[in-house]
Length: 86
Image (cartoon, rainbow, N blue to C red):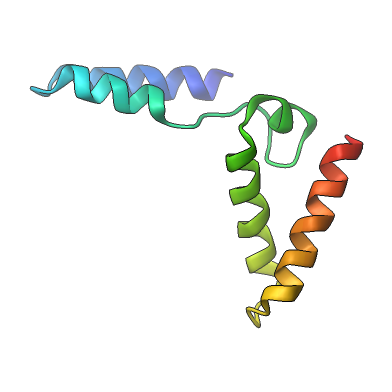
């Protein structure tokens, strides 16, 4: 929570010095901030399905170095099953 607040304050202070304050504020609020560590119960409660899926794919691509799409999809499915049980 503290990290998010610091990021917002820093972003706003940087935005205030620019000519496109409205655009910068809109960009700030369109960013996908989440609470909790990725994969935690709080993470799943505070993020969108799209963010969760990006996280799952990213983690699976790190694990499956061969790039085998079937293995990656299987890995992603296992993440979804873990998420449902949380």
